[in-house]
Length: 439
Image 1 (tube, rainbow, N blue to C red):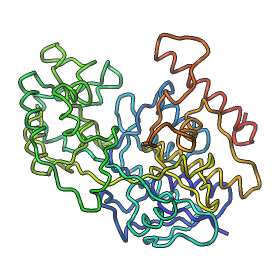
Image 2: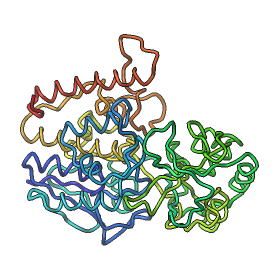
Image 3: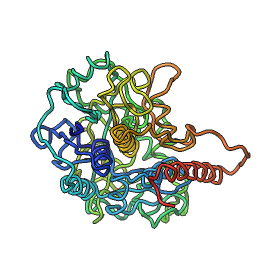
Image 4: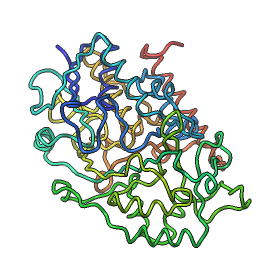
């Protein structure tokens, strides 16, 4: 009997890939292109909506450690990301169209995966099912999930605008990466103090778009994707110490550090499109044009896409799921992706990868794969499916999830490298013992 996977986002594709590579037939359901969510536009699988960055590459970082662990476990999305990467300093950013296209091609060409197009209105009644419908689950299915789970929580997610490189004023911007990391991969738009203050006043006074009626209840904004205008209202210098921080940068025209800096990151390999880093927003399109054109170098910017804000939904995973990403009250159902409360592209992909592997082991009569708690995958799984203090809120990969080293190391970068090396070493031991990794 085939395993059902609902949703062909990053999590669903990873789950299907893990199962198919274990010679277990999969039926992968995807509602696109017959129906699109408010934030999706491409018919391809694993569409990246919010940003094209998959965060840091270096092993001694939470994001880098996570991707390396996934690679060791046979991830689909990590190799695809590496093959479609664009220059982004120390981060792994991708050409999002090329990335999604590659994932789609690999999934559709796998002989063990059957793709079924169309909206799923009813959960399958037979076989094991992975629900990986993402943060924008369709209304029909969301209602079933709410009934299944006894309620859900919602917060808001926002995407940043994209501008064309050709429309930027090259006399006002400069290429550089913070502290010289990377090969001048970012376009930097430097503010002096007076320019920043004018921009700030315009930003906090700008008009936001009206949200849809279905988005109104339980209005919460996740910190990692907070709209720039909401962040700015916390104080004059909040964004200047956040996404507009000038540290590690010097304007070559003045030789000095700017008062504030907006960074633009390459959106595609050709370098024709750039996104405004940290500028997720819910401002009206006309307001975005007016206010963001006050950024030095963007006075005549052509917006290839304006920022948008959309609903994001997740379940109370610590109450509902066990460590194999399976429902405690219905062992036929597994969950994966942002709907579980993991936050981030690769975190979502990781949950799908693990859910797929756990189902495969179950079908093969094996015990659940137990990942060491000092691995990023193990720590995130423990956070999402374990007990939490207070209300459960989304979590992305971070070093704070991992146990401290026995030895005290003051240098943070060296300490993180040691923590990552420890976790990766323990993961390799487990994978070798399970026959999942060759010596």
